[in-house]
Image (cartoon, rainbow, N blue to C red; front, top):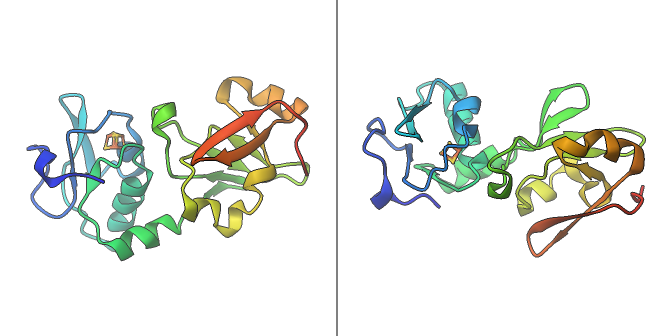
Length: 175
Ligand code: SF4
């Protein structure tokens, strides 16, 4: 959870802010480039969201932030933003949203396929994401890192959530 006492001085006045725990992974700037900017190797809020769409993108970035360095949202707003993930990008490809700090905020893609779903880089193992309708097959899907995506496609890997972290193995995937 972001901490007001660590709020960066560069943030525009208003509810949304980034604190000093930012690791400069670029996630928020990619998701809401009109709201978040970069200064001194950290992200900050360039201006507060005005329209409904801007606010939704600012909230999605808040949810996706791997270090929970963005603050200023109400609980109900966070829950609504959480419910937008996994988010369909194109065809069967989805953005899982919640980035993991262990991958320095790498984008986690979920590809839904009849022959077995593929997870490219794992998201944070957050309850709302795991329970989402799109992700009902989380525990039996193939999973791969960007470097091994092609291998995982052909060999199959399994992914399980244990103690809030993703664990991958090279056993044949359960379908
Ligand atoms: S998503 Fe979080 S950690 Fe990444 S740049 Fe934005 S505020 Fe920093």
